[in-house]
Image (cartoon, rainbow, N blue to C red; front, side):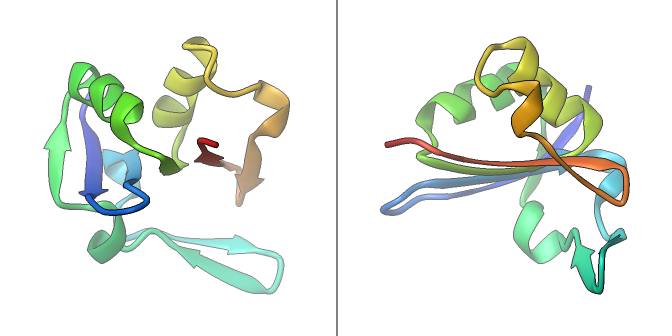
Length: 97
């Protein structure tokens, strides 16, 4: 699995990641367009192993896509009921406290 991601180092550290094929897509959320912009979500492509490591390091995560969000559900990081669908695509934001 190939994941598109961008890791923002700082306080807080932020991981933005999505399924590769979603880059550049525009989704509808009611009256709002939700754009999966390369400028926010893409710095490089990573493997599942790299994704897992970055999730441990990140304090905030913004994740979009079946596979990316599915990894978080399978890993027990999020509850399936917490996932929001935007135009049928799973989206989750995680804040570590």
